[in-house]
Length: 248
Image (cartoon, rainbow, N blue to C red; front, side):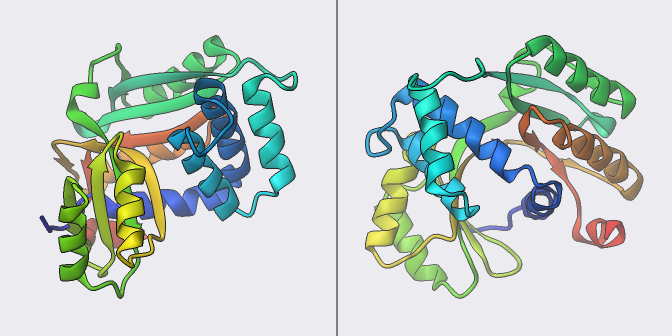
């Protein structure tokens, strides 16, 4: 159940990008609103809302902002009619890319996403064109210092799908989409405190990139992530460590 996370380097790079762009608050306000609209305003019975709440608190968002975002979602206040839209396509080197957005203007968002793909040498596809290359999973992240064998045993007992040990010693536990919180709660009850948890689109195959192609793909990912309406960007790009070091 253990291995190397091929996409960890891109994920960690993305986290730095998110922080640099200052999009964290906007991202989680939208997620809180949509999660509350779809599943109700009680995080105890709405796992998606609970996850968004944890993320917002982790980003130091105030309770007042959180409460207003949730209230907007359940209809207690007026607000923009935000909807979720997904886009799929191929980037340079045949890299499969999925883009998750939340928008109040689908025409604006579609045009912006298409422009990014076209400008960076990619092609925006139709629904389903690359989705089959990804599985929606829960991901629970543990920082370095956790006893790997004990965590693997606890994860197996909690019906986790997989445990991946990264090169830096951190550990990712993967779960089914619906089982994220049940597994996280079981692991915490067993004494393992997670550093983070989220729903991700995990690629089932990878495209190994050389330096030139990696630069082009990351340019596209950066351009997509810079769009205000974009929540998440996933790809099946695998950038070898030596290439990532050259990229800086």
